Length: 190
Image (cartoon, rainbow, N blue to C red; front, side, top):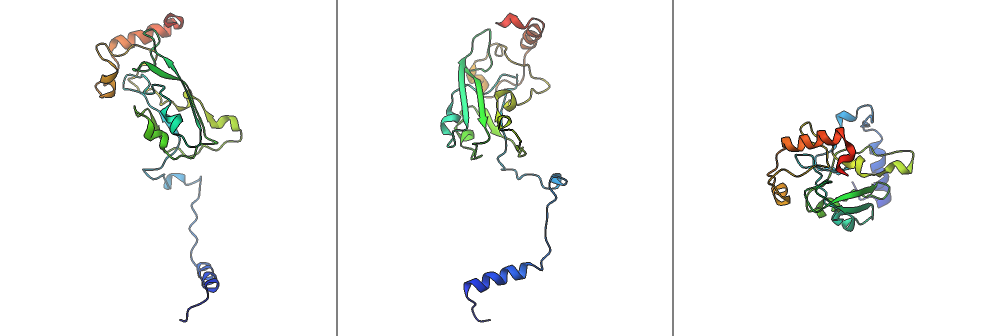
């Protein structure tokens, strides 16, 4: 076949595809048939240690790494009465503005404690702009069945390095008792 001008070869591709079978994915009716790929970057999640303490130490490196300026972190100091993470600090305020986020994953790479990860959740659309600014309580991973909600003390005899080395495998009886006392008397830790 003689060589066609570029415009005609483009038209030929369009003409030829008109007779091919259309492959339409029926979303959202059949979304379970098309799960996201394993490396997909979706909604962020703030993770916890095995005993329930938060991994975020409020260092703000994720906010510095974000090219879209979508993350706001305000750190605060832990005290022995109010401990939310094993480090000296914790993220008191944590916000991600999904109107600005470009899902690049640079915040994940910057996190020194692997507190921030990305899930496979991708349905983030909403009718109100305010609902797309996720607060800390929206981003925190749910407590596992054996976890104790913070604030509570670290595992007896362990320090922050032991947490980062993965030596803490779950809450102790002392932590559970402390959480029960806080539930009965919420103002006791303040």
